[in-house]
Amino acid sequence: MLYFVFGLGALFILLAFVLTKNNAKYLLAGYNTASQEERDAFDLDGFIPFFKRFHIFLGLSFITLGCFAYFLLGGDAAGGFLGVYPILAYIYFIWKAQKFGNPNKSINSKIGIFVLLITLVFVVGLLMMGMKENRMVIGSMDIEITGMYGDEWTRDEIESIRLIEDLPSISSRLNGFALERTSKGWFKTAEGEKVKLILNTKTPPYIELTFSDGSRVFYASSDVPSEDTYAELSQAFPDLTE
Image (tube, rainbow, N blue to C red; front, top):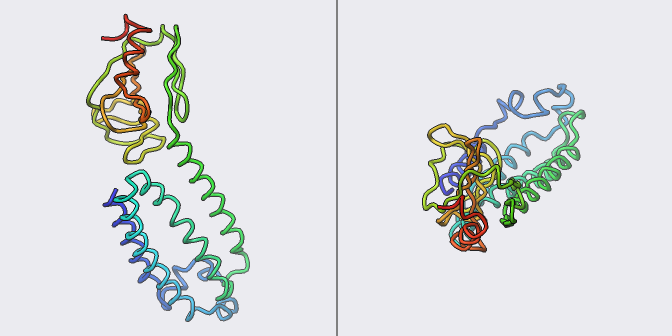
């Protein structure tokens, strides 16, 4: 997580030095497609220092606040910060940049702000859904995991249920949601197997559900110890547990 914080912060700082007056006609969106008359009406001399100050501040503040969130609030809080802070920053950037003029009248700053606001709502909603606790509901003939990437399986679909200390080695995320202590979605193991993780905590042990088609789901709750869940599963399905 910290590598990502420092890497993305450094990228923002690097961007501050990319744009110059000489290359703006090639790199600056809107300006590069504007007519000469529209370019003359745009305050490029004022915009470039603003662009530079903004990205230096964004990079330094991203690193500082990201480290603060990581060490004081935890990895999941830092992950949420990574998703939200740059969007808020660029909403401010587009809003303030309007004072320099519009180099291309076909580009509407208000549309850009609106799109970023929609993106912000989506990211915040995804974070809230992803960090919401998944609960395992154990019935007499089925098992249900509620929440994001949850599902319901009948007794006949389940081949075995185990309590394990180690997760398989994960090589990549195929889809879903992943922070330092939370992983939900489909992931690929180092052996090439596709598995589903519904982990509200990365603290072992974990519940492993293996199904008749060979697929596996790994589950852990941050509220209920896995040992207690496994004991309840053993009582409901003694022939499936070890």
